[in-house]
Length: 373
Image (cartoon, rainbow, N blue to C red):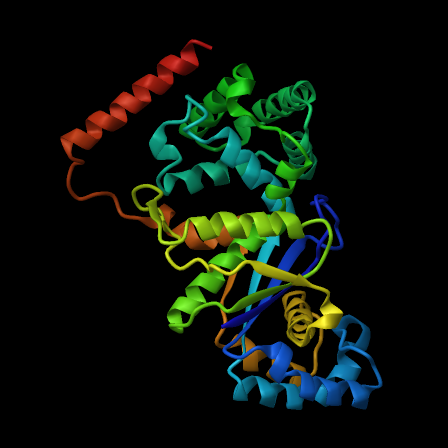
């Protein structure tokens, strides 16, 4: 399999550009190398349009529509599969705050079952309810801070603001858990280790790298489902994040063959089929595959944003996307995935004594830790 990866909505480490609230990754897969088999068609289309390359943003709906049917025929003939991955950038600031501050492996005031079971998402939604955009900006600023003293000062102010809002949570249990965890984090800033050690580590927590994780996992899943090895992953070249993307791909390659259990009721982390080939970074103007994925990603983004496209372009999009995949990192997506937790029936039988003992001990430990603050 050959994969071609492009992104849109990139604002780097700025998560709060109102004009680009989401980062998009488009992945176009094919059993043959599109840089070879698509070039003759694209050469013909470029000549017809009088352009050197097909750049969807420059051509727009009007000029892309006349070539849509030929691209769709080519896509169907060669079984092109387009997948879309999204990251809500403002939500990412809140999620990264939660994952660092409320990690029970770091924060002694968070019992293990509130982080390593699906109860983690209930707690995340409670914490996110305390945030507005200003506090999310403060959390992201602290997360990026490379000076430990300045990071602690930013967090001190953020914790105080969150505790002032704790009464907004509707139930006493949530107020008790969230307040206790925040107070412990405020008293133990070095244990939380919230800031970044350097610029490179900051890149690793960017939405670009979070989205690229989804890309690599999707490539592993798709290639395994089609019983095909990954021959090449071609990624659109851009200066800031390609080095970090290559580092992440190498880290995943080393995990190939491994599976890990994230906790009771949680999804499994499966790295069994991670690609062995490293990504190749190329300018979009030098790859026919990147030229094609640029067009489809542009269409996907227009559809996401409910902007008009022609019927011909919609047919082109679905000629590739109907066999693809999609996923999203956002609070809304997590809510869709986990909202069933709120509607689970009460257990018909008492919990096993052993489990009750474990939960009671965890709660007793939490209470002692918080009361000692």
